[in-house]
Image (tube, rainbow, N blue to C red; front, side, top):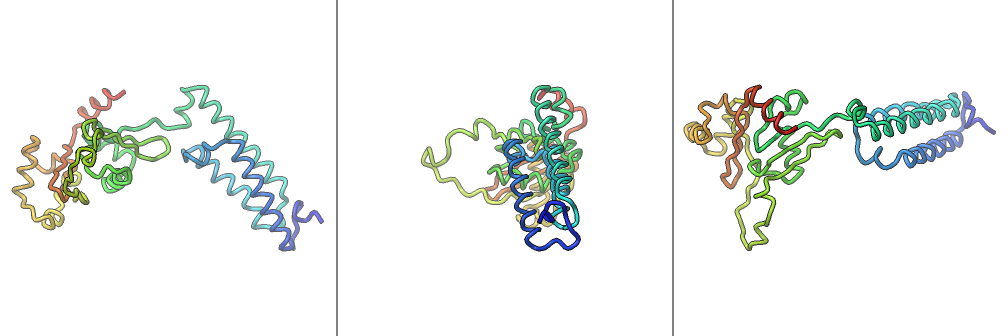
Amino acid sequence: MLDFWQGAEELPIYGYLIRAAIVYTYIFILLKILGQRSISAINPLDFLFGVIIGDVVGEPLAAGDVPLPGPLAAAALIAGLHLFLSWIALKLPRFRRVIEDEPIVLIKNGKIIHEQLSKNKITVESLMMDLRLRSAIDLTEVDYAVLESNGQISVIKKSAKDSATAEDVGLSPPSKGYPTVLIEDGHVVETNLHNRTRSKKWLLDQLEKKGIKEPKDCFLMTLDEAGTVFISERLSEEQQNHILGNSQ
Protein backbone atom coordinates (compact mmCIF):
# COMPACT_ATOMS: atom_id res chain seq x y z
CA MET A 1 0.00 0.00 0.00
CA LEU A 2 2.85 2.33 0.85
CA ASP A 3 4.99 1.38 -2.13
CA PHE A 4 4.74 4.95 -3.44
CA TRP A 5 6.41 6.11 -0.20
CA GLN A 6 9.00 3.40 0.44
CA GLY A 7 9.71 2.57 -3.20
CA ALA A 8 9.53 -0.73 -5.07
CA GLU A 9 11.24 -2.43 -8.00
CA GLU A 10 7.94 -2.68 -9.86
CA LEU A 11 6.22 0.52 -8.74
CA PRO A 12 2.78 0.72 -10.37
CA ILE A 13 1.76 3.73 -12.43
CA TYR A 14 -0.51 5.09 -9.71
CA GLY A 15 2.54 5.13 -7.40
CA TYR A 16 4.40 7.47 -9.76
CA LEU A 17 1.32 9.69 -10.01
CA ILE A 18 1.03 9.92 -6.23
CA ARG A 19 4.76 10.70 -5.97
CA ALA A 20 4.47 13.44 -8.58
CA ALA A 21 1.57 15.05 -6.70
CA ILE A 22 3.48 14.89 -3.39
CA VAL A 23 6.70 16.33 -4.87
CA TYR A 24 4.84 19.12 -6.70
CA THR A 25 2.94 20.13 -3.55
CA TYR A 26 6.10 19.89 -1.46
CA ILE A 27 8.15 22.13 -3.75
CA PHE A 28 5.24 24.56 -4.06
CA ILE A 29 5.16 24.91 -0.26
CA LEU A 30 8.94 25.36 -0.09
CA LEU A 31 8.79 28.17 -2.65
CA LYS A 32 6.01 29.87 -0.71
CA ILE A 33 8.11 29.68 2.46
CA LEU A 34 11.20 31.06 0.70
CA GLY A 35 9.20 33.92 -0.82
CA GLN A 36 8.78 35.35 -4.32
CA ARG A 37 12.42 36.37 -4.54
CA SER A 38 13.38 32.83 -5.48
CA ILE A 39 11.23 32.90 -8.62
CA SER A 40 11.22 36.58 -9.57
CA ALA A 41 14.98 37.23 -9.68
CA ILE A 42 17.35 34.45 -10.66
CA ASN A 43 20.69 35.23 -9.05
CA PRO A 44 23.49 32.65 -8.64
CA LEU A 45 22.22 31.51 -5.24
CA ASP A 46 18.67 30.96 -6.54
CA PHE A 47 20.00 29.18 -9.63
CA LEU A 48 22.08 26.82 -7.47
CA PHE A 49 19.05 26.13 -5.29
CA GLY A 50 16.86 25.34 -8.29
CA VAL A 51 19.40 22.99 -9.90
CA ILE A 52 20.05 20.99 -6.71
CA ILE A 53 16.39 20.76 -5.71
CA GLY A 54 15.47 19.59 -9.20
CA ASP A 55 18.12 16.87 -9.10
CA VAL A 56 17.27 15.70 -5.57
CA VAL A 57 13.51 15.41 -5.93
CA GLY A 58 13.66 14.39 -9.59
CA GLU A 59 15.30 11.02 -8.93
CA PRO A 60 12.40 9.40 -7.02
CA LEU A 61 10.06 10.48 -9.83
CA ALA A 62 12.15 8.59 -12.37
CA ALA A 63 13.27 5.61 -10.26
CA GLY A 64 10.44 3.80 -8.48
CA ASP A 65 12.76 1.87 -6.14
CA VAL A 66 14.13 5.05 -4.50
CA PRO A 67 12.42 5.76 -1.14
CA LEU A 68 10.68 9.15 -1.05
CA PRO A 69 11.45 10.34 2.54
CA GLY A 70 15.22 10.77 1.95
CA PRO A 71 14.97 13.13 -1.05
CA LEU A 72 12.21 15.15 0.63
CA ALA A 73 14.31 15.54 3.78
CA ALA A 74 17.33 16.57 1.70
CA ALA A 75 15.20 19.10 -0.18
CA ALA A 76 13.99 20.55 3.12
CA LEU A 77 17.58 20.90 4.37
CA ILE A 78 18.68 22.61 1.13
CA ALA A 79 15.71 24.99 1.33
CA GLY A 80 16.60 25.77 4.95
CA LEU A 81 20.23 26.55 4.00
CA HIS A 82 19.02 28.73 1.12
CA LEU A 83 16.68 30.63 3.43
CA PHE A 84 19.43 31.04 6.03
CA LEU A 85 21.95 32.39 3.50
CA SER A 86 19.34 34.79 2.13
CA TRP A 87 18.61 36.01 5.66
CA ILE A 88 22.32 36.46 6.44
CA ALA A 89 22.79 38.40 3.20
CA LEU A 90 19.89 40.67 4.16
CA LYS A 91 21.30 41.38 7.63
CA LEU A 92 25.02 41.59 6.80
CA PRO A 93 25.87 43.79 3.77
CA ARG A 94 29.50 42.60 3.73
CA PHE A 95 28.44 38.97 3.51
CA ARG A 96 25.91 39.90 0.85
CA ARG A 97 28.74 40.57 -1.62
CA VAL A 98 29.94 36.98 -1.14
CA ILE A 99 26.57 35.69 -2.34
CA GLU A 100 25.42 38.39 -4.74
CA ASP A 101 27.70 40.12 -7.23
CA GLU A 102 27.93 43.90 -7.22
CA PRO A 103 26.33 45.77 -10.11
CA ILE A 104 28.87 46.35 -12.89
CA VAL A 105 28.86 49.54 -14.96
CA LEU A 106 29.10 48.74 -18.67
CA ILE A 107 28.32 52.21 -20.03
CA LYS A 108 28.91 55.46 -18.17
CA ASN A 109 28.19 58.94 -19.51
CA GLY A 110 27.55 57.37 -22.92
CA LYS A 111 30.98 55.70 -23.03
CA ILE A 112 31.29 51.93 -23.27
CA ILE A 113 33.65 50.40 -20.71
CA HIS A 114 34.91 47.67 -23.05
CA GLU A 115 37.19 46.11 -20.43
CA GLN A 116 34.09 45.31 -18.35
CA LEU A 117 32.43 43.75 -21.39
CA SER A 118 35.46 41.53 -21.87
CA LYS A 119 35.67 40.54 -18.20
CA ASN A 120 32.02 39.53 -18.12
CA LYS A 121 32.09 37.77 -21.52
CA ILE A 122 29.55 40.16 -23.05
CA THR A 123 29.81 40.69 -26.81
CA VAL A 124 28.82 43.91 -28.53
CA GLU A 125 25.92 42.08 -30.18
CA SER A 126 24.67 40.83 -26.81
CA LEU A 127 24.93 44.31 -25.29
CA MET A 128 23.02 45.89 -28.16
CA MET A 129 20.35 43.19 -27.96
CA ASP A 130 19.79 43.91 -24.26
CA LEU A 131 19.63 47.64 -24.94
CA ARG A 132 17.04 47.09 -27.67
CA LEU A 133 14.97 44.95 -25.33
CA ARG A 134 14.87 47.94 -22.99
CA SER A 135 13.80 50.38 -25.71
CA ALA A 136 17.28 51.92 -25.91
CA ILE A 137 17.74 51.52 -29.67
CA ASP A 138 19.50 54.87 -30.03
CA LEU A 139 22.84 54.49 -28.24
CA THR A 140 23.31 58.27 -28.15
CA GLU A 141 20.46 58.42 -25.62
CA VAL A 142 22.06 55.96 -23.18
CA ASP A 143 23.74 57.49 -20.14
CA TYR A 144 24.32 54.36 -18.05
CA ALA A 145 24.02 50.62 -18.64
CA VAL A 146 24.54 48.40 -15.61
CA LEU A 147 24.91 44.62 -15.38
CA GLU A 148 22.81 43.72 -12.35
CA SER A 149 23.45 40.83 -9.95
CA ASN A 150 20.69 38.74 -11.57
CA GLY A 151 22.45 38.92 -14.95
CA GLN A 152 20.11 41.47 -16.52
CA ILE A 153 21.23 44.81 -17.93
CA SER A 154 19.42 47.92 -16.74
CA VAL A 155 19.51 51.15 -18.74
CA ILE A 156 19.39 54.77 -17.63
CA LYS A 157 18.79 57.26 -20.41
CA LYS A 158 20.19 60.78 -20.47
CA SER A 159 17.93 63.27 -18.73
CA ALA A 160 17.45 65.33 -21.87
CA LYS A 161 16.27 62.22 -23.71
CA ASP A 162 13.95 61.08 -20.95
CA SER A 163 11.65 64.06 -20.71
CA ALA A 164 8.83 64.93 -23.11
CA THR A 165 8.22 62.57 -25.99
CA ALA A 166 7.82 63.68 -29.60
CA GLU A 167 4.12 62.95 -29.33
CA ASP A 168 3.88 65.23 -26.28
CA VAL A 169 5.06 68.24 -28.29
CA GLY A 170 3.21 67.35 -31.48
CA LEU A 171 6.20 66.21 -33.54
CA SER A 172 6.58 63.25 -35.88
CA PRO A 173 10.30 62.48 -36.10
CA PRO A 174 11.55 60.00 -38.72
CA SER A 175 11.92 56.38 -37.69
CA LYS A 176 15.39 55.61 -36.35
CA GLY A 177 15.12 51.99 -37.38
CA TYR A 178 17.72 49.34 -36.66
CA PRO A 179 21.25 50.60 -35.87
CA THR A 180 23.97 49.12 -38.06
CA VAL A 181 27.43 48.42 -36.60
CA LEU A 182 30.14 50.08 -38.73
CA ILE A 183 33.07 49.64 -36.34
CA GLU A 184 33.32 46.91 -33.74
CA ASP A 185 36.26 46.67 -31.36
CA GLY A 186 38.47 48.77 -33.62
CA HIS A 187 37.63 46.87 -36.82
CA VAL A 188 35.63 48.36 -39.68
CA VAL A 189 32.72 46.15 -40.78
CA GLU A 190 33.19 46.70 -44.51
CA THR A 191 30.01 44.85 -45.51
CA ASN A 192 27.80 47.03 -43.32
CA LEU A 193 29.59 50.16 -44.50
CA HIS A 194 28.91 49.18 -48.10
CA ASN A 195 25.28 48.26 -47.38
CA ARG A 196 24.67 51.68 -45.86
CA THR A 197 26.29 53.30 -48.96
CA ARG A 198 28.89 55.07 -46.88
CA SER A 199 32.50 55.54 -47.95
CA LYS A 200 35.62 55.01 -45.89
CA LYS A 201 36.27 58.77 -46.12
CA TRP A 202 32.85 59.50 -44.63
CA LEU A 203 33.61 57.11 -41.78
CA LEU A 204 36.98 58.73 -41.07
CA ASP A 205 35.35 62.18 -41.16
CA GLN A 206 32.82 61.08 -38.55
CA LEU A 207 35.60 59.77 -36.35
CA GLU A 208 37.56 62.98 -36.75
CA LYS A 209 34.59 65.00 -35.51
CA LYS A 210 34.86 63.02 -32.28
CA GLY A 211 38.61 63.52 -32.08
CA ILE A 212 39.40 59.95 -33.12
CA LYS A 213 42.17 59.58 -35.69
CA GLU A 214 41.89 55.93 -36.71
CA PRO A 215 39.23 53.18 -36.58
CA LYS A 216 41.42 51.13 -34.22
CA ASP A 217 40.90 53.87 -31.61
CA CYS A 218 37.12 53.41 -31.81
CA PHE A 219 35.43 50.62 -29.87
CA LEU A 220 31.96 50.91 -31.38
CA MET A 221 30.35 52.98 -34.14
CA THR A 222 26.75 52.59 -35.27
CA LEU A 223 24.50 54.31 -37.80
CA ASP A 224 20.71 54.15 -37.67
CA GLU A 225 18.23 54.69 -40.49
CA ALA A 226 17.64 58.30 -39.45
CA GLY A 227 21.33 59.04 -39.97
CA THR A 228 22.23 59.29 -36.28
CA VAL A 229 25.81 58.25 -35.61
CA PHE A 230 26.93 56.82 -32.28
CA ILE A 231 30.64 56.60 -31.53
CA SER A 232 32.31 55.21 -28.42
CA GLU A 233 36.07 55.60 -28.33
CA ARG A 234 38.43 52.90 -27.12
CA LEU A 235 39.44 53.90 -23.61
CA SER A 236 42.80 53.17 -22.08
CA GLU A 237 42.97 51.17 -18.88
CA GLU A 238 43.75 54.35 -16.97
CA GLN A 239 40.70 56.13 -18.44
CA GLN A 240 38.44 53.19 -17.61
CA ASN A 241 39.71 53.03 -14.04
CA HIS A 242 39.17 56.77 -13.71
CA ILE A 243 35.58 56.53 -14.96
CA LEU A 244 34.78 53.55 -12.78
CA GLY A 245 36.46 55.22 -9.81
CA ASN A 246 34.23 58.26 -10.15
CA SER A 247 31.10 56.09 -10.26
CA GLN A 248 31.78 54.51 -6.88
